[in-house]
Image (cartoon, rainbow, N blue to C red; front, side):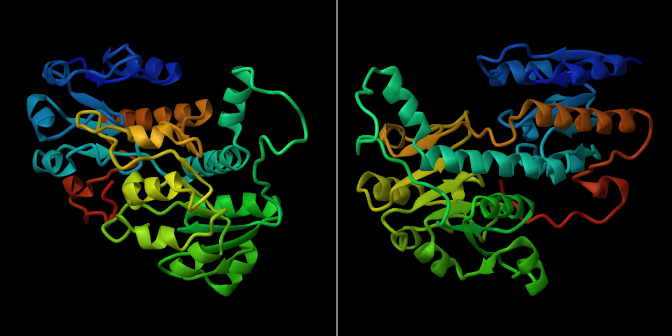
Length: 342
């Protein structure tokens, strides 16, 4: 029997080629719009494998509509857009991808967003294109340099660690906070100093958020914490939007109580719900750099992510346990301990 594989958005061509070798591929071809809910429910009806991508929810209704479903393979680390419990009840494995190489890409993007925000690069680009450039070496367009500044990293996992290394290379002082403090040897090797969350917000010129979204980190960056920041401080968030009280951040930015923010993630990121994305007020503020949740959007990284997802499908269809199973209970194994909620 021919395996039918469904992909809800375009993916890198090398992955497409390998999927076509595995079976009959159906791929939604558009990049200018998402599949409508009705289209999705109809499309999955006779599919054996669903390829999962962020922004396309595979909830219980979608899983139920896929009567012949055998595997969900997500191109995502945690795949919270998949109702993993519903899949598990049907004995359907759900796979993700490892975070190892992806973390370095996200760290690089995080640092790029920091530089773009500090130096006001998007604003400078608009300034020039609008014909407003009149003179050099004036007070008309000043950014913030990195060297000799203090950067505070909230969360010192793989992403935070790589950001710390990049910051050190730019002659920045690096402090961090983490639920479980690193050992003295680890701190020395990375070149970082520990601070409490409150002291980090008080001290730093740049605050970079990299923790996962859990019940403990949701709204962790409150109005009170933002109120501790220095007037010239800049906040960078490539973690998850709900880690920050977005309304409180808007107020601080609008009132000039902090210098700026670079945001790749937002409180509302479900395209099926309103509101979606950054608020109109946030979009209107000149001291904010906004990007559309693109922290892993390097061509090379997206291809690696896609090929790893295909590798999980290949192993499953060959009768082997996939590499990155998110619900190992379907194989009689212990469930994964995962505190992330988004």
